[in-house]
Each structure stands twice: as structure tokens, then as C-alpha cells.
Length: 96
Image (cartoon, rainbow, N blue to C red; front, side, top):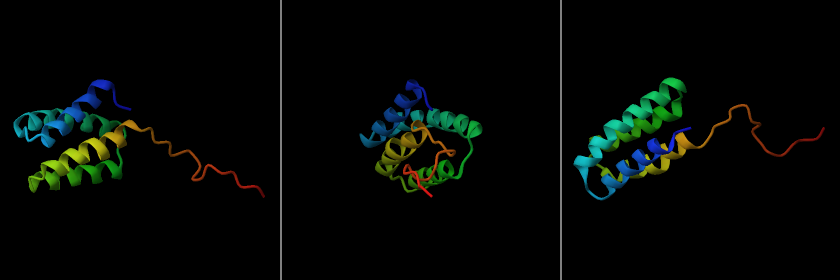
């Protein structure tokens, strides 16, 4: 789970892209990449790689709103919400 400072950094980056402040957004995005890299090294996974691919594609298209939305709604949700792979697939118990 991310600390509040890292969460605020990602939100600020998304807000900068959304408001058209590309210079500030790019600086914040570089810092976000450090956070993402540290997270990935601790907990590698395909879902994070898929989010990163989408961010790269959006950046190549200069789709700043797409980057902002992905950072704030996809990436942040993924990094903040705990994932428990040991939990059962359904919360309803099945009786024999």
C-alpha cells in the first residue's frame, strides 16, 4: 500500500495533466515512475504492467487526459487497494 505522500504525488501529477500543466506534470510523472518501480520490485504483476503500457501509449499520443485518468483512477486504485490473492473467489460459503 502506498503512503499518503506517494498518493498525493500521483494525484498531483494527474491534476497537472488534466489542467494542461504539462511541464509540472512531466516532472511529477518522473517521480511517480520511481514510486511505481519500487512497488513493482516489491510486488511484480501483470496488471501493473498493463497499466504502465497504457500510460506509455497515452504519453506517446500526447493524450494528457487519458494519462490523468489512468494515473488517478486505474493506477492509484491498483496501488492503494489491498489485493488478497488468498481470499476465496466468492464471499458466499458453499454448503455440501
